[in-house]
Length: 244
Image 1 (cartoon, helix red, strand yellow):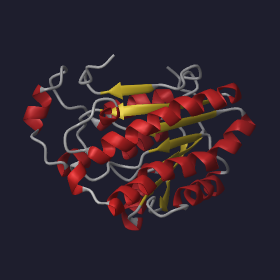
Image 2 (spheres, one colour; image 1 turned 90 degrees about the vertical axis):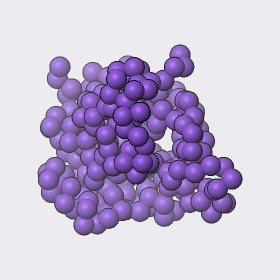
Image 3 (tube, rainbow, N blue to C red; image 1 turned 45 degrees about the vertical axis):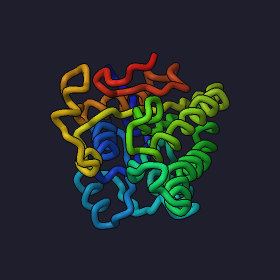
Image 4 (spheres, rainbow, N blue to C red; image 1 turned 120 degrees about the horizontal axis):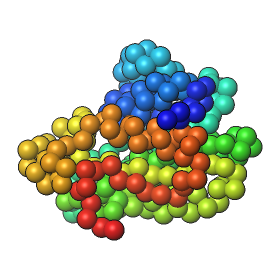
């Protein structure tokens, strides 16, 4: 299938590693012009050089940074057709272990950066009557995962924004969707120090997913043929979620 992504301009947040990097790689392979961001300037520069993309250093936890990031991507690419909001996973922890400052910092990095980036990207998409916005969230937004209080709480709210915003901009030919990774072989999985064999046994597919598998679904959602698919939260989880 021709995804009609040639020369589309895309920004992938958190694109120096993990799922963000896999999505950026898939978009580059389809002929899109891509910019990626990450906090570490050295790491994002190396990843961008490997991909043939633009690399932008950005700390999304800083108020206003996400909007500035989008404006810089627009400057470098000459516009923006695709926005992938991928903020990375919040730190693990139980409710009793998380203080107010951790909640506020995570809210800024995960929630407000999403709002700021989308707000900056939308006007151009609506004017050109073509746009794709994809939020990478988590299966934890639908079925809470033990010890992930921050992710369970904040990501669920993002799904409400996805559905509501999709209705507001659908007539402008802009789609807004969420993609929910299940257990996938990334650095994040290693950071959580999970028993990978035990995790794999809990997944109906019998294994942990690969970043490339996730990225292939993302590429379709960001494509031309996916123009009638909006307001959805789609899990790529090997059948893990039990909810309908």
